[in-house]
Structures are given as C-alpha cells and as structure tokens.
Picture (cartoon, rainbow, N blue to C red):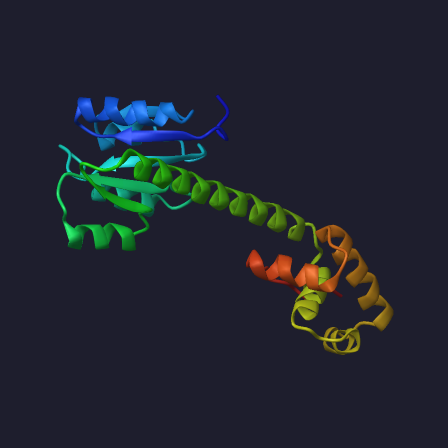
Amino acid sequence: MSIMVPIVYVIDDDQAMIESLTWIIESIGLEAKSYSSAQDFLDNYNPQQHSCILLDVRMPGLSGPELQTKLNEMGGINPPIIFISGHGDVPLAVRVMKAGAIDFLTKPFNDQILIESINKALRVDRANRDKRQECAQARAKFALLSPREAQVLQGIVAGKPNKVVSSELNISLKTVEAHRASVMKKMGVKSVPELVKLVLTNSIQKETVDEE
C-alpha cells in the first residue's frame, strides 16, 4: 500500500477495545492497524506513512503520554494523536493537548465524535506533510542559486531597489538585473511578491559569500 494512503494506528492493550475501534475505523472506509503496546508500535513505525494514532493512556510498559514524548523527541512529522482514556483526568488531558494531541476522549464515547476526530487528525497530518514537501522543494530550488544570486535574493526579500543592491554588492545594475532574472527562473516564480512569499513561508536561509 502507498504510504500516502491513510492508516489509523490503534494502540491499546485491551483486545476488545482494539476490535471495537477497528470496526468503527473500517466502517468509514479507512485502514486500521493495531498494536498491543507502544513499544510494538515503535518497532514498526514508519514516519513517512500518512496516518494518525488512537492511543490508550494507560498501558503496560510505555504509557500513551510517554509514547507521545518519544515521538516528539524524534522530530520530523509525527502522526496526530487522539488519546483514549477510561478516566476523566483533566490535568493529564491538558498536558497531552499542550504537547500536540488532537483530542482526548473519555470512554465511553460517541462513535460519531470519534470519527470526526479521526478525520480531523488525518487532515492535519496531510496538511503537515504537504507543507513539509513544499518546504523541501523550495529549499531544493534555493540550493541551485549561486552565492551571488543568493545575495541578490536577500536584497529582493528585504525590499531593496536594484540600485541599492548594486551599491551594496559593488556590482553593476545590469548584473543585478541579470541575477534577479536568474533567481526568478530558478525559484520558479513570476513575480516579486510570489518570490518573497515562497522564501518567507518556507523560512529559507543560506549563508552567502562574496564573489570576485
């Protein structure tokens, strides 16, 4: 199966709960994959997989919040987590939500609420992955720029006129204009506002050196 096809991971040490959650997930046309422990999930975890997690709070070995902490420490794009608990532990709910959880559901919960939470989590994961891909593509384009082109780009993003960039870099105005045209082409944009947005929204930075 393609890693872009969503999977809902169910992590719970209660087999009856796993079967119940799996039935609900599959009833809306999604694939469910279950694990009886957090460690079992980590041993098989693919960070590239488009997914979300239904995670029990209390389990033998690594608890749900401990797994959340480990995933956060790993960095990258972590699957959005929906916590499921048999106890209305408000302080814990606040803590895991602050750490990035999508939802905290207390058993018993309404099936429709769970489904809405799953759909929300998958939308968040898809958006996060699209953003990461967009950023990687922007950085790949930026890497094609020469050091001088990168300097000209910095001037453009700072809103400096070509004459100012020419003076600061001690190069001719025609050279600035040529570099500017090359930057626009390599970055795949047709306007300065589009270029500035691309650079700023993807936090592109690069050290530059003076050319002879």
